[in-house]
Image (cartoon, rainbow, N blue to C red; front, side, top):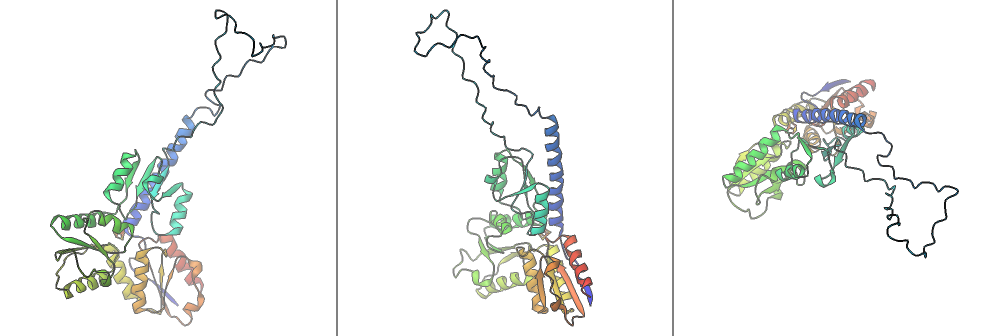
Length: 342
Ligand code: SF4
């Protein structure tokens, strides 16, 4: 059985860049935490509550509470209440490191980052202090403003291709177009694009999502960077059938186009095709769909231990590709596991 790896399989530029930014930030956070510990005062309480002096055995008994007060000139001042020994409130950790959402759609990588101390917050509200990383999907400008207003340090790992899509949406809006975002409803990247696209923007995943009445006939299109060309063509075609010629800004990123084209070409030549990547990764799922159209025996796996030897019975050629959020070591592990099946 020959194992053939597709060109451009695996982590793209934007994901690699975000990962290296987070790993660098994690190293820095660990150094900062260590130097804070070194410079920290002794763990003994700084202000031990003064203990009352032990009564001498021969001390006079205390006056009963009902005893009349001594003259003011001789009465001792009332003792201040001793400080309580309650645990002081812990200050938020200024060295903590968070990503806003899982850094990439790959559970194994997110787990590895957690072991390096990188926490995942679902929103800025969940970050008490420290550093927050904006992942390659990007966010709405209001989210970055909220983080800065809260005093957080922001590391913006938005992929430059996603930033270009933001700009394209904004330009279309400024030129008076109603913006149609071709992409997955609710996907974080699409949410970020929408924030630049104006209040009448629409998200369309397939032609059936186009409303019967559009807000305007002046339609501008931008595309989630990992969408397929086929989806874009289906939606522009549906608009043309309604007599609307949209202005199309094809923002599918080059890395996605190359990966999809190479995977399709390979899938046409092999008996079995494997697509490696997170099941929660939209671009990996689309890659699987593209391969399945030309190679019915296409399987989407996350890890090598999901391989089923019966898939390869009588297979002479097996192809492998991987989504944009799949790190190299996961692809290598699958190739090695396949080779060991022979
Ligand atoms: S836009 Fe392209 S290069 Fe950037 S993160 Fe997305 S898939 Fe990767």
